Amino acid sequence: MPGSPIIIWFRRDLRLGDHPALHAACATGRPVLPVFIHDDQVAGLGAAPKWRLGLGIEALATAIADKASRLILRRGPAQEVLDRLIAETGAGAVWWSRLYDPAAVQRDAAIKRTLRERGVDARSFGGHLMFEPWTVENKTGGYYKVYTPFWKSLRDRQVDEPLPTPPAIPVPSAWPASDRIADWRMGAAMDRGAAVVRPYVRLGEAAATARLGGFVSGAIADYDAMRDVPAADGTSGLSENLALGEISPHRCWQAGMRARAESKAGAETFLKELVWREFAYHLMHHTPHILDRNWKPDWDRFEWNSDETDPRVVAWKRGRTGIRFVDAAMREMYVTGRMHNRGRMIVASYLTKHLLSHWRIGQKWFENCLIDWDPASNAMGWQWSAGSGPDATPYFRVFNPETQLEKFDPRRVYASRWIAEGHANPAPEALSYFDAIPRRWQMLPNDAYPKPVIDADRGRKVALAAYESRDF
Image (cartoon, rainbow, N blue to C red; front, side, top):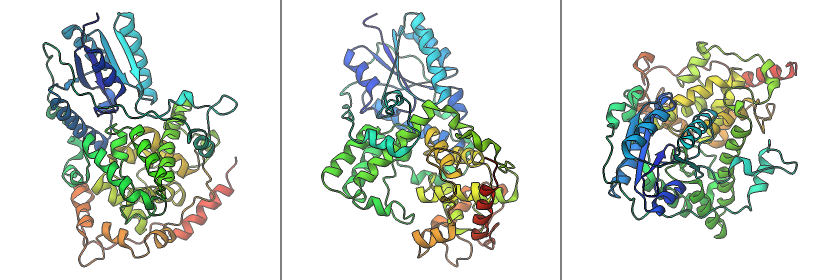
């Protein structure tokens, strides 16, 4: 069916530029039907990721409309939705960008097999990663388990130049019906928090591209040093856009390479961070149990606290541990939907080491609260911090959050920005926290700041003692 429409099934690739599947479809000259499907995997997202995805879909729909085309929205099991669309439109092809988490892989493989059996051209394309996980092998033909050799194997490998945005999207002679995204209520679970977080969102492909441009023309020069200073605007901020594919890693890489060629000091470190993201996906592909089980099986015998009702765990979730770096970072997440990377390491270390609580508690909490949630990076980050994952050194990474605050926030700019209690004139961001959190927490900015649920130095000693006494 050479003239039949091609369905482009959008998922975590909410952009028009550097989109291999869309580029290839437009190049055929055949009608293109852009589609987004709200299936069980979308329904199962946490509150903040689902809300942010809804915003991203709206931005994509606007960008597609600017090309005189439409984004068709449908809800239901993906296979059933695609079958109906094929029947309604006569589409002869369904193309999409690959995802790599086990649930998506299983769904996509079944759909591809079923469609091909029916004579429909079903294809998957790259674009979410720079390097397909199965194309990166160590010298013995296996996968990498340590980041540094993984980086060394990729740093000089050719990365494709970004593909241009199609000048036009060929449209069909008739359009199928579409849902209204408002009816999906993607932000329902965010409640009043959505209005607090929304000003911090940099939404859509144009904003992501501008964010990258601003970073490489400015902050990348000092990125190596300033990326660890939570009060500074020293990072790219691109995590939310990369998570939803509003910008491609290829575009980020090429921008970083140009900055390195211009001798900008932080460029290589930025490139390493992009490859760290690739490493997370590499591990998720080869060892999918990293998402829900200890990557190192020996840690199955470690006696984690798994009680989410533990008052100390509840205090951690609410930013009320009495440890300022931990609490500031948690509150930053509730107000902005993101958390500075240094903060992520501190709060993860504190939960899994000072409180000896299971990393799965933190992983699931982040999965609900982060607008830049990414399945591979979230899982690897938590296991790295806990000691149960790759590149993990549990003895050396028991961060003392008080000395970390002294080192990276000596003037308490970051802590004061996010913690209201004890301040006569709290910062607006600190007050916003109380507008974002659930009312049932019954917290007020004039509450007394809590005493530590566990002293920072004592907690470190408890963690080290637990590691010394483990039976593996």
